[in-house]
Length: 441
Ligand code: 5AD
Ligand code: SF4
Image 1 (cartoon, helix red, strand yellow):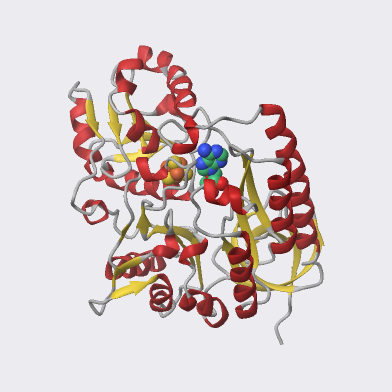
Image 2: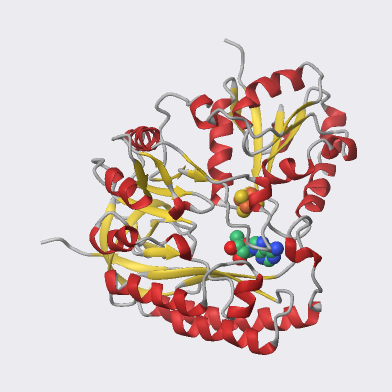
């Protein structure tokens, strides 16, 4: 048998990219993963385009591999993901070290591209092919997995928020057929997975073909997944307020495997700004939705994304964002300064100064941190269920996640990854909670 070649993948950005990297790795038969680029026969950067100067950061990272290529001419270097999609052949022009460029919709062709790159060609594929890439991707048989996994069920976005590049890099909204998702979920569970996070840029807009031939909603899919024995927990991310249908709200109340945590970005609190962002919901409709969700599931932990300093945002508009944060109450949140993305509508508008953006971001983050802290501290004394993930930082310690996605540390005492343990929270630290296993009667 020939020795396996080594693959180094660096993943940027969202969880969908983490999932894509796993699938790319599996599809490259004859390779095994390495954590050090120095050992690699193939280096792949699975890139994200959502942050500012994303392409520039990829070029500077690529530059750092120059000496490796000089030492080992057999090394191949590839760029995948959304920067690959956005930049295309320009990457190879600007950085001749790059042998392979593959977009997020065509990476099922990676094995052929790798073979071409290995033969000395420059291999590029940034198509949006008709065929379903997930159908074409090879899986490695029954490799053991950790207790948590991501599973992409939906890709792309038709919403065209004025700040966002995703509809251009990931393309139109597509949902995978439910039968395929169920098959993949069963396979993950057989390999040791106990918690699955369903992924999509607009995951709650899921409307794939169901096992009965009809169109299924995300809620219907979640109910079908909940019937898989051995699967203990289901999560999904990320969602748009306009696609939060009644059956999904109801599932939050009645499906015991669906975790009480929801990432539901609002982005801003001023209706004027929401309109300029092309968000098609208002602050009031968002808050009403949160009320309905909390009526179904009172302990729901809410998470969100916020943008400050969007074009035309006044201090009053910004205060409306602070108000919506106070009214909704977040257990966790991600907040960003608006920055332009080429090709998106808001990039063409007059921009606010960096000083104003910095100041607003600082004030918003102070409020969000305070809320997050209060929610975390309020867990002390409460009973939670923890899915054990891995050894903690200290000897004899394990760490896992509560239903609310809080990291919980505890005394390992015979618990192994994959166990679900009832615990009482005893303390709240800077980034995690401490827990104590309950003695079951
Ligand atoms: N500027 C700042 N933040 C952005 N996001 C998306 N595009 C931009 C942009 N141009 C944020 C949004 C989104 C999250 C993933 O990234 O809040 O929900
Ligand atoms: Fe980044 Fe969005 Fe692409 Fe994910 S989908 S990699 S967040 S640009």
